[in-house]
Length: 86
Image 1: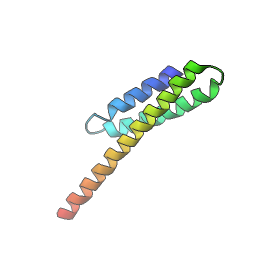
Image 2: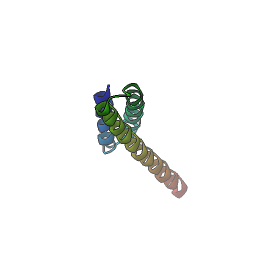
Image 3: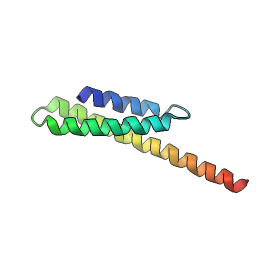
Image 4: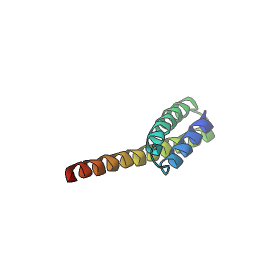
């Protein structure tokens, strides 16, 4: 489960760079990485390696969600500015 969350976090971070719908994919995969990473972090109380991988997945997922949200906000701001020009 720890590796699944890490892979989702890495894919979410890579999806931010995709054009068009990449920001939405990044948000979805980021949410999945954070949720599965949090569950893995809580379940593996005594083991260090899965907890470290889960913490990395949570970090990657949060960064991807932040960047994807920023891209959405910038897109909406640009569309609002274009609407004001017309």
